Picture 1 (cartoon, rainbow, N blue to C red):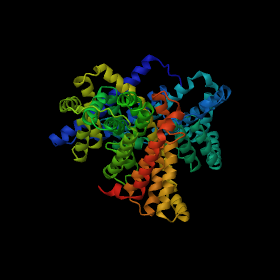
Picture 2: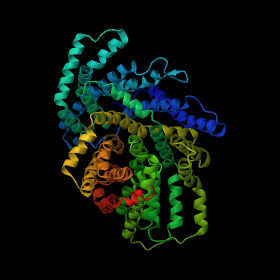
Picture 3: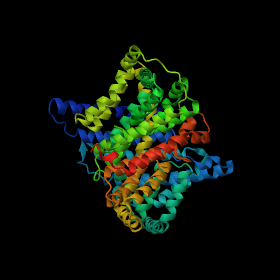
Picture 4: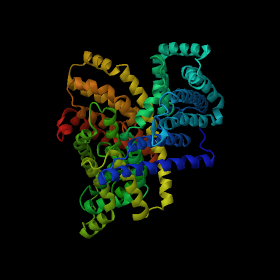
Length: 616
């Protein structure tokens, strides 16, 4: 993938994405005003919003690919000799081209069958929206081939991709030329279906290896899904159908907007304003600055949904604040890193939205929000208490009511944002989508016209800059949904449940084993992939032991945020190493006390359900 693409193309894709963001923000408010104030329903607006969100997801996936920002597991081959790296990069180029080719043909074939000419939204045929998906795969494939270093292997991948796409290509012959699939294509397709059935377990292992070599996770998940559907009968077009299904879900559409709101906040003066509030209000007692650091990092992660963004955006600022208060640099960086993922447990947590949406038959998003509040609060308090234990500085800032009020006044708009969102959503005034749109418009207006942190043009540039963050997450959603569908269709949860029950009879032993497995998952997978793929598998098993679905959900999310910090491959460890310019070994050493305390809290929440069910 060559990041040096033509300027015109880059401007077009960015402009379209920003236009999509504007629509995603304005359409919910059009609905709110029309239906709340005038009691006039706007026909088709729900479909317009979710299909606009789908277009946005496709274009941001392209932007993320061009900028090489798709979510990956840290590549272990980076430590290999140059000769080994060249071989690995060549193999990666072949695999990436192979998978993108297969995805292109499977989605292009389905383009002709998924919607009829009468299926329209505001006069626009729905197949127009769906057609952007194969376009996105095609553009990413072209960008992959443009990496000239391994063009021969990329071409080899395309050839292999065409061979395993014989079924969808045969479908194109039918849709385009009204003729049956040529005999040679049918023969190739039958050979592939038979081969995939025999090689399935080996293919899964191979693709997992490629994940550790740095192949983007959505490519790896898509590859496993493609082989799974091939060996299960060949209906690989389900991958594109499921991607469209999840990316046109209203709750999912809210996620990139919340992420964008957090990103806009992190680029302005909001961080320093909030830190100043907590410095003046709590800096007079021991640990006051620690309260500021934990609350601010938690606040930002609730909106960005990605703890790494919080560490990168606020890590340096909070380190200066804590070291200025006499805290050691190592302890300061460790506290910030350990607190980065706490926001996953507080409204409007994107992870909770995702979990509830994925498992809507078992658990409600609203109930999950309530169930996670107490565990999240305990975790936050534990980080503060441990931080205070390490705080040996005796210097304190005298409390000044005048300074405190001035700081509160200056940060009033930032402090009101979560209040508006939580009150609006939980009262029923806002839908989740409307709350997300409000968050973007609110933060945009604050940064441009109230704080004047940046000009209108700069704010648009910040939105463009945030697109790879959202694009990476949305690509994972689309890929993982197909695999999740296959697992459910193959009745894997029931099989897995029977298997576990045959060996484990104790509820408490099951909970311990569940934590061990989820902690490993949290280390190796991003939270959104884990939610889509793993959570549907564990819920039926947990229910067979009489565990409340909300309790299961909170345990799952706590393990995910703890997995970000768990050595040796916790994602936040690498992000902290980059953000603080500190060797990874030193980051791990500093994080261990905080990791231990969070694990103890996890065990408390696991074995005392009261913490998750008290507010239900």
